[in-house]
Image (tube, rainbow, N blue to C red; front, top):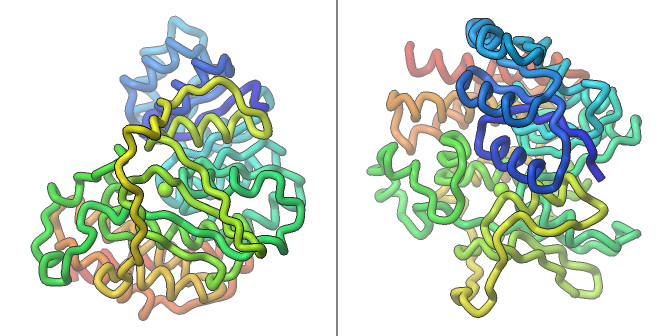
Amino acid sequence: MTQVLSVLGSTGSIGTQTLDVAEKCGIRVAAITANRSVELLEAQARKFHPDLVVAMDETAAKDLQVRLADTGIRVASGMEGLIEAATLPEADTVVTAVMGMVGLRPTLAAIDAHKRIALANKETLVCAGELVMANAAREGVDIVPVDSEHSAIFQSLQGCSDRREVKRLILTASGGPFFGWTKEQLEQVTLADALKHPNWSMGAKITIDSATLMNKGLEFIEAMRLYHVAPEQIQIVVHRQSMIHSLVEYTDNAIIAQLGTADMRLPIQYALTWPQRTEGVATELDLFSCPDLTFRKPDPETFRCLGIALETAKKPGTPCAIMNGANEAAVDLFLREKIRFVDIPELVDYALSVVPAQSVENLETVLEADRAAREAVYSRISG
Ligand code: MG
Protein backbone atom coordinates (compact mmCIF):
# COMPACT_ATOMS: atom_id res chain seq x y z
CA MET A 1 0.00 0.00 0.00
CA THR A 2 1.16 3.49 -0.88
CA GLN A 3 2.72 5.56 1.90
CA VAL A 4 4.18 8.48 -0.03
CA LEU A 5 2.91 9.80 -3.32
CA SER A 6 4.13 11.88 -6.22
CA VAL A 7 1.31 13.31 -8.36
CA LEU A 8 2.19 14.26 -11.94
CA GLY A 9 -0.58 16.52 -13.20
CA SER A 10 -2.01 17.49 -9.81
CA THR A 11 -4.25 20.35 -11.00
CA GLY A 12 -6.30 18.36 -13.55
CA SER A 13 -9.45 16.36 -12.89
CA ILE A 14 -7.65 13.13 -11.87
CA GLY A 15 -4.91 15.06 -10.04
CA THR A 16 -7.27 17.02 -7.79
CA GLN A 17 -9.30 13.88 -7.03
CA THR A 18 -6.05 12.02 -6.24
CA LEU A 19 -5.13 14.69 -3.68
CA ASP A 20 -8.61 14.35 -2.18
CA VAL A 21 -8.11 10.58 -1.83
CA ALA A 22 -4.58 11.05 -0.43
CA GLU A 23 -5.89 13.47 2.20
CA LYS A 24 -8.73 11.17 3.28
CA CYS A 25 -6.54 8.05 3.30
CA GLY A 26 -3.68 9.73 5.17
CA ILE A 27 -1.17 9.28 2.34
CA ARG A 28 1.67 11.82 2.29
CA VAL A 29 2.18 13.83 -0.93
CA ALA A 30 5.88 14.42 -1.68
CA ALA A 31 5.65 16.05 -5.11
CA ILE A 32 3.03 17.77 -7.27
CA THR A 33 3.36 19.00 -10.84
CA ALA A 34 1.29 20.96 -13.35
CA ASN A 35 1.75 22.79 -16.60
CA ARG A 36 1.07 26.39 -15.59
CA SER A 37 -1.88 26.51 -13.14
CA VAL A 38 0.14 28.57 -10.67
CA GLU A 39 -2.66 29.58 -8.30
CA LEU A 40 -3.97 26.06 -7.80
CA LEU A 41 -0.43 24.67 -7.48
CA GLU A 42 0.31 27.24 -4.78
CA ALA A 43 -2.89 26.37 -2.89
CA GLN A 44 -2.11 22.64 -3.15
CA ALA A 45 1.49 23.21 -2.01
CA ARG A 46 0.35 25.16 1.05
CA LYS A 47 -2.17 22.47 1.94
CA PHE A 48 -0.06 19.33 1.36
CA HIS A 49 3.48 20.62 2.09
CA PRO A 50 5.25 18.53 -0.57
CA ASP A 51 9.06 18.54 -0.90
CA LEU A 52 8.89 19.49 -4.57
CA VAL A 53 6.52 21.49 -6.77
CA VAL A 54 6.99 21.53 -10.55
CA ALA A 55 5.53 23.84 -13.17
CA MET A 56 6.34 22.70 -16.71
CA ASP A 57 6.20 26.28 -17.94
CA GLU A 58 9.37 28.31 -17.07
CA THR A 59 7.54 31.59 -16.43
CA ALA A 60 4.97 29.85 -14.25
CA ALA A 61 7.79 28.19 -12.28
CA LYS A 62 9.45 31.56 -11.62
CA ASP A 63 6.14 33.01 -10.44
CA LEU A 64 5.62 29.98 -8.22
CA GLN A 65 9.08 30.35 -6.70
CA VAL A 66 8.15 33.87 -5.54
CA ARG A 67 4.74 32.76 -4.27
CA LEU A 68 6.20 29.87 -2.26
CA ALA A 69 9.34 31.72 -1.05
CA ASP A 70 8.12 31.68 2.58
CA THR A 71 7.47 27.91 2.63
CA GLY A 72 10.90 26.40 1.93
CA ILE A 73 9.30 24.14 -0.71
CA ARG A 74 11.57 23.50 -3.68
CA VAL A 75 10.29 24.58 -7.12
CA ALA A 76 11.49 23.10 -10.42
CA SER A 77 10.42 23.41 -14.06
CA GLY A 78 10.26 21.68 -17.43
CA MET A 79 10.68 18.01 -18.34
CA GLU A 80 13.68 17.86 -16.01
CA GLY A 81 11.46 18.88 -13.10
CA LEU A 82 8.76 16.41 -14.15
CA ILE A 83 11.29 13.57 -14.21
CA GLU A 84 12.64 14.64 -10.82
CA ALA A 85 9.09 14.46 -9.42
CA ALA A 86 8.67 11.01 -11.02
CA THR A 87 11.85 9.66 -9.42
CA LEU A 88 11.79 11.42 -6.03
CA PRO A 89 13.43 8.99 -3.53
CA GLU A 90 10.79 9.71 -0.83
CA ALA A 91 7.84 8.57 -2.99
CA ASP A 92 6.87 4.92 -3.40
CA THR A 93 4.04 5.54 -5.87
CA VAL A 94 3.77 7.89 -8.84
CA VAL A 95 0.35 8.89 -10.18
CA THR A 96 0.78 9.77 -13.86
CA ALA A 97 -2.18 12.07 -14.48
CA VAL A 98 -0.57 14.44 -16.98
CA MET A 99 -2.40 14.76 -20.28
CA GLY A 100 -0.99 13.33 -23.50
CA MET A 101 2.41 12.17 -24.73
CA VAL A 102 4.28 14.34 -22.21
CA GLY A 103 3.63 11.54 -19.70
CA LEU A 104 5.83 9.00 -21.45
CA ARG A 105 9.35 10.04 -20.36
CA PRO A 106 8.49 10.52 -16.68
CA THR A 107 6.64 7.16 -16.62
CA LEU A 108 9.71 5.35 -17.97
CA ALA A 109 11.90 7.22 -15.45
CA ALA A 110 9.58 6.24 -12.58
CA ILE A 111 9.73 2.59 -13.67
CA ASP A 112 13.55 2.72 -13.65
CA ALA A 113 13.35 4.21 -10.13
CA HIS A 114 11.13 1.25 -9.02
CA LYS A 115 8.01 3.25 -8.18
CA ARG A 116 4.54 1.77 -8.31
CA ILE A 117 2.85 3.40 -11.29
CA ALA A 118 -0.76 4.44 -10.75
CA LEU A 119 -1.38 4.93 -14.44
CA ALA A 120 -3.88 7.60 -15.44
CA ASN A 121 -2.16 8.60 -18.68
CA LYS A 122 -3.46 6.30 -21.40
CA GLU A 123 -1.31 7.79 -24.16
CA THR A 124 1.73 6.21 -22.49
CA LEU A 125 0.50 2.67 -23.13
CA VAL A 126 -1.15 3.45 -26.46
CA CYS A 127 2.04 4.89 -27.96
CA ALA A 128 4.75 2.93 -26.23
CA GLY A 129 2.92 0.03 -24.58
CA GLU A 130 5.41 -2.67 -25.51
CA LEU A 131 8.32 -0.58 -24.25
CA VAL A 132 6.63 0.47 -21.00
CA MET A 133 5.34 -3.01 -20.14
CA ALA A 134 8.70 -4.63 -20.99
CA ASN A 135 10.57 -2.16 -18.77
CA ALA A 136 8.07 -2.65 -15.93
CA ALA A 137 8.43 -6.45 -16.17
CA ARG A 138 12.23 -6.17 -16.24
CA GLU A 139 12.29 -3.92 -13.16
CA GLY A 140 9.54 -5.84 -11.33
CA VAL A 141 7.40 -2.70 -11.13
CA ASP A 142 3.59 -2.83 -10.71
CA ILE A 143 1.50 -0.79 -13.11
CA VAL A 144 -1.91 -0.31 -11.55
CA PRO A 145 -4.53 1.34 -13.76
CA VAL A 146 -6.51 4.38 -12.62
CA ASP A 147 -8.82 4.55 -15.65
CA SER A 148 -12.21 3.29 -14.40
CA GLU A 149 -12.57 0.56 -17.05
CA HIS A 150 -9.06 -0.80 -16.64
CA SER A 151 -9.36 -0.65 -12.88
CA ALA A 152 -12.60 -2.64 -13.14
CA ILE A 153 -10.79 -5.27 -15.23
CA PHE A 154 -7.86 -5.24 -12.80
CA GLN A 155 -10.27 -5.74 -9.88
CA SER A 156 -12.14 -8.51 -11.73
CA LEU A 157 -8.81 -10.28 -12.34
CA GLN A 158 -7.88 -10.41 -8.63
CA GLY A 159 -7.67 -14.03 -7.61
CA CYS A 160 -6.96 -15.22 -11.16
CA SER A 161 -3.59 -16.93 -11.01
CA ASP A 162 -3.58 -18.34 -14.53
CA ARG A 163 -4.28 -15.83 -17.29
CA ARG A 164 -5.12 -18.68 -19.70
CA GLU A 165 -8.41 -18.90 -17.77
CA VAL A 166 -9.42 -15.51 -19.15
CA LYS A 167 -11.59 -15.79 -22.25
CA ARG A 168 -12.11 -12.10 -22.93
CA LEU A 169 -12.23 -8.64 -21.47
CA ILE A 170 -15.47 -6.70 -21.81
CA LEU A 171 -14.80 -2.98 -21.92
CA THR A 172 -17.82 -0.82 -21.17
CA ALA A 173 -18.42 2.50 -22.92
CA SER A 174 -20.92 5.20 -21.99
CA GLY A 175 -21.37 5.86 -25.70
CA GLY A 176 -20.77 9.58 -25.19
CA PRO A 177 -23.25 12.44 -25.72
CA PHE A 178 -24.03 11.46 -29.35
CA PHE A 179 -24.85 7.77 -28.91
CA GLY A 180 -27.38 6.67 -31.53
CA TRP A 181 -26.74 9.69 -33.79
CA THR A 182 -26.34 9.34 -37.55
CA LYS A 183 -23.42 10.55 -39.68
CA GLU A 184 -25.58 13.45 -40.87
CA GLN A 185 -26.35 14.52 -37.32
CA LEU A 186 -22.67 14.35 -36.38
CA GLU A 187 -21.92 16.86 -39.18
CA GLN A 188 -23.77 19.49 -37.14
CA VAL A 189 -22.00 18.95 -33.80
CA THR A 190 -20.57 22.11 -32.22
CA LEU A 191 -17.79 22.48 -29.66
CA ALA A 192 -20.33 23.25 -26.91
CA ASP A 193 -22.31 20.07 -27.74
CA ALA A 194 -19.15 17.95 -27.63
CA LEU A 195 -18.02 19.34 -24.28
CA LYS A 196 -21.12 17.98 -22.48
CA HIS A 197 -20.62 14.48 -21.12
CA PRO A 198 -23.63 12.66 -19.66
CA ASN A 199 -21.95 10.72 -16.84
CA TRP A 200 -18.37 11.70 -16.08
CA SER A 201 -16.86 15.09 -15.44
CA MET A 202 -13.40 15.28 -17.03
CA GLY A 203 -10.89 17.54 -18.76
CA ALA A 204 -11.65 19.03 -22.21
CA LYS A 205 -9.41 16.70 -24.27
CA ILE A 206 -10.80 13.48 -22.83
CA THR A 207 -14.37 14.84 -23.05
CA ILE A 208 -13.91 15.36 -26.80
CA ASP A 209 -12.32 11.90 -27.08
CA SER A 210 -15.38 10.50 -25.29
CA ALA A 211 -17.67 12.21 -27.79
CA THR A 212 -15.77 10.88 -30.85
CA LEU A 213 -15.32 7.47 -29.09
CA MET A 214 -11.56 7.78 -29.70
CA ASN A 215 -11.32 7.51 -25.92
CA LYS A 216 -12.75 3.98 -26.11
CA GLY A 217 -10.38 3.18 -28.97
CA LEU A 218 -7.41 4.33 -26.87
CA GLU A 219 -8.73 2.32 -23.92
CA PHE A 220 -9.05 -0.75 -26.15
CA ILE A 221 -5.36 -0.50 -27.05
CA GLU A 222 -4.44 0.29 -23.45
CA ALA A 223 -6.25 -2.90 -22.32
CA MET A 224 -4.37 -4.97 -24.93
CA ARG A 225 -1.04 -3.70 -23.58
CA LEU A 226 -1.88 -3.87 -19.87
CA TYR A 227 -3.33 -7.37 -19.95
CA HIS A 228 -1.37 -8.86 -22.87
CA VAL A 229 -4.47 -9.85 -24.84
CA ALA A 230 -5.14 -9.93 -28.60
CA PRO A 231 -7.69 -7.53 -30.14
CA GLU A 232 -10.09 -10.46 -30.66
CA GLN A 233 -10.15 -10.95 -26.89
CA ILE A 234 -11.69 -7.57 -26.13
CA GLN A 235 -15.35 -6.73 -26.62
CA ILE A 236 -16.62 -3.17 -26.32
CA VAL A 237 -20.15 -2.88 -24.91
CA VAL A 238 -22.10 0.38 -24.75
CA HIS A 239 -23.53 0.62 -21.25
CA ARG A 240 -25.18 4.01 -20.92
CA GLN A 241 -25.61 4.03 -17.14
CA SER A 242 -21.85 3.82 -16.34
CA MET A 243 -22.45 1.62 -13.31
CA ILE A 244 -20.68 -1.51 -14.47
CA HIS A 245 -17.17 -0.25 -15.13
CA SER A 246 -16.01 -3.31 -17.14
CA LEU A 247 -16.01 -7.11 -16.92
CA VAL A 248 -13.87 -10.19 -17.36
CA GLU A 249 -15.25 -13.35 -18.94
CA TYR A 250 -13.52 -16.59 -17.96
CA THR A 251 -13.21 -19.84 -19.93
CA ASP A 252 -16.06 -21.42 -17.93
CA ASN A 253 -18.31 -18.51 -19.08
CA ALA A 254 -18.41 -16.90 -15.64
CA ILE A 255 -18.36 -13.13 -15.91
CA ILE A 256 -16.93 -11.04 -13.08
CA ALA A 257 -17.76 -7.33 -13.08
CA GLN A 258 -17.02 -4.32 -10.90
CA LEU A 259 -19.84 -1.89 -10.15
CA GLY A 260 -19.82 1.49 -8.50
CA THR A 261 -20.95 5.07 -8.90
CA ALA A 262 -19.30 7.13 -11.65
CA ASP A 263 -16.79 8.47 -9.13
CA MET A 264 -13.14 8.36 -10.18
CA ARG A 265 -11.99 8.46 -6.58
CA LEU A 266 -12.76 4.73 -6.26
CA PRO A 267 -10.33 3.53 -8.98
CA ILE A 268 -7.79 6.14 -7.78
CA GLN A 269 -8.05 4.85 -4.22
CA TYR A 270 -7.72 1.22 -5.31
CA ALA A 271 -4.62 2.01 -7.38
CA LEU A 272 -3.05 3.47 -4.22
CA THR A 273 -4.18 0.90 -1.64
CA TRP A 274 -3.98 -2.29 -3.77
CA PRO A 275 -3.73 -5.14 -2.84
CA GLN A 276 -5.59 -3.85 0.21
CA ARG A 277 -8.92 -2.04 0.41
CA THR A 278 -9.57 0.79 2.85
CA GLU A 279 -12.65 2.78 3.85
CA GLY A 280 -14.27 4.31 0.78
CA VAL A 281 -13.76 7.90 -0.28
CA ALA A 282 -16.09 7.59 -3.30
CA THR A 283 -19.86 7.84 -2.99
CA GLU A 284 -21.81 4.60 -2.38
CA LEU A 285 -23.83 2.93 -5.10
CA ASP A 286 -27.47 2.52 -4.06
CA LEU A 287 -28.71 -0.46 -6.09
CA PHE A 288 -32.35 0.38 -5.34
CA SER A 289 -32.02 3.76 -7.03
CA CYS A 290 -30.22 2.36 -10.11
CA PRO A 291 -31.91 2.75 -13.47
CA ASP A 292 -32.25 -0.43 -15.56
CA LEU A 293 -28.89 -1.53 -16.93
CA THR A 294 -28.65 -1.76 -20.73
CA PHE A 295 -26.03 -3.17 -23.11
CA ARG A 296 -25.67 -2.20 -26.78
CA LYS A 297 -23.23 -2.79 -29.61
CA PRO A 298 -20.89 0.09 -30.50
CA ASP A 299 -21.09 1.67 -33.96
CA PRO A 300 -17.52 2.05 -35.26
CA GLU A 301 -18.79 3.02 -38.73
CA THR A 302 -20.64 6.13 -37.62
CA PHE A 303 -18.07 6.91 -34.93
CA ARG A 304 -15.10 6.64 -37.23
CA CYS A 305 -12.50 7.41 -34.58
CA LEU A 306 -13.44 4.13 -32.88
CA GLY A 307 -13.27 2.27 -36.20
CA ILE A 308 -9.83 3.71 -36.95
CA ALA A 309 -8.57 2.79 -33.47
CA LEU A 310 -9.82 -0.80 -33.74
CA GLU A 311 -8.04 -1.18 -37.10
CA THR A 312 -4.85 0.49 -35.87
CA ALA A 313 -4.84 -1.71 -32.75
CA LYS A 314 -4.06 -4.72 -34.97
CA LYS A 315 -0.90 -3.11 -36.39
CA PRO A 316 2.45 -3.56 -34.64
CA GLY A 317 4.99 -0.71 -34.42
CA THR A 318 4.33 3.04 -34.57
CA PRO A 319 0.79 3.26 -36.06
CA CYS A 320 -0.80 3.58 -32.60
CA ALA A 321 1.58 6.46 -31.78
CA ILE A 322 0.82 8.11 -35.12
CA MET A 323 -2.91 7.77 -34.49
CA ASN A 324 -2.62 9.17 -30.97
CA GLY A 325 -0.44 12.13 -32.02
CA ALA A 326 -2.74 12.98 -34.92
CA ASN A 327 -5.76 12.76 -32.62
CA GLU A 328 -4.18 15.06 -30.02
CA ALA A 329 -3.44 17.63 -32.74
CA ALA A 330 -6.91 17.31 -34.29
CA VAL A 331 -8.64 17.67 -30.91
CA ASP A 332 -6.50 20.74 -30.20
CA LEU A 333 -7.66 22.25 -33.53
CA PHE A 334 -11.29 21.39 -32.73
CA LEU A 335 -11.03 22.96 -29.26
CA ARG A 336 -9.71 26.13 -30.94
CA GLU A 337 -12.65 25.94 -33.40
CA LYS A 338 -10.37 25.60 -36.44
CA ILE A 339 -12.02 22.39 -37.67
CA ARG A 340 -15.39 20.61 -37.41
CA PHE A 341 -16.16 17.63 -35.17
CA VAL A 342 -16.30 15.27 -38.17
CA ASP A 343 -12.88 16.49 -39.37
CA ILE A 344 -11.18 14.81 -36.38
CA PRO A 345 -11.30 11.24 -37.83
CA GLU A 346 -10.51 12.62 -41.32
CA LEU A 347 -7.28 14.13 -40.02
CA VAL A 348 -6.32 11.04 -38.04
CA ASP A 349 -6.88 8.90 -41.15
CA TYR A 350 -4.82 11.34 -43.20
CA ALA A 351 -1.86 11.22 -40.77
CA LEU A 352 -1.96 7.39 -40.76
CA SER A 353 -1.81 7.43 -44.57
CA VAL A 354 1.13 9.85 -44.92
CA VAL A 355 3.36 9.06 -41.93
CA PRO A 356 5.26 5.81 -42.61
CA ALA A 357 4.90 3.05 -40.00
CA GLN A 358 8.01 1.71 -38.32
CA SER A 359 8.82 -0.91 -35.73
CA VAL A 360 9.28 0.45 -32.19
CA GLU A 361 13.02 0.27 -31.45
CA ASN A 362 13.16 2.74 -28.58
CA LEU A 363 11.60 5.85 -27.08
CA GLU A 364 12.95 8.04 -29.89
CA THR A 365 11.09 6.06 -32.58
CA VAL A 366 7.84 6.66 -30.70
CA LEU A 367 8.50 10.37 -30.14
CA GLU A 368 9.41 10.81 -33.81
CA ALA A 369 6.19 9.09 -34.97
CA ASP A 370 4.21 11.33 -32.64
CA ARG A 371 5.95 14.47 -33.91
CA ALA A 372 5.49 13.56 -37.57
CA ALA A 373 1.79 12.81 -37.02
CA ARG A 374 1.16 16.17 -35.35
CA GLU A 375 3.05 17.99 -38.06
CA ALA A 376 1.01 16.21 -40.76
CA VAL A 377 -2.24 17.35 -39.11
CA TYR A 378 -1.23 20.95 -38.45
CA SER A 379 0.27 21.48 -41.90
CA ARG A 380 -2.81 20.00 -43.56
CA ILE A 381 -4.98 22.64 -41.87
CA SER A 382 -2.73 25.69 -42.21
CA GLY A 383 -1.53 24.72 -45.70
MG1 MG B 1 -12.21 5.48 -18.99
